Amino acid sequence: MNHRGVEFTVTRTAIPGGWQWQFRVGDQIKSGKTETKIDLLAIRRVQLRIDRELKAIARKTV
Image (cartoon, rainbow, N blue to C red; front, side, top):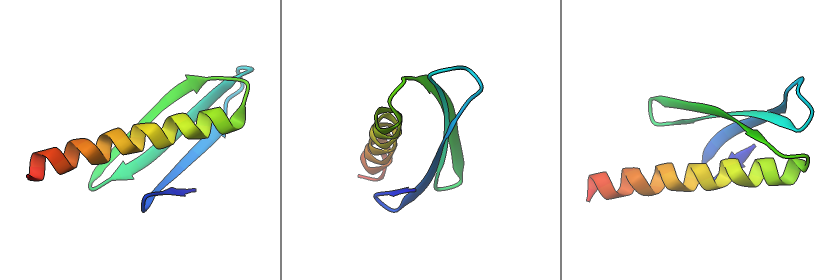
C-alpha cells in the first residue's frame, strides 16, 4: 500500500485481532504491532504513524 509516497505493509498476525506493520522513510525502517479487529483501522493507524514521521522530518529540515 502507499500513503503520501511511502510504501507500507500491514499483515494479520496469528493472534486474533493482531496486526504487524512496516514502512520505510528515508533510510530508516519503522515497524510495529497494533491490535484491532477492523482491518481498515489497522491501516489508518499506520497512515497516522507515517504522517507523524513525515512531519518530524519536515521539522528537522526547516
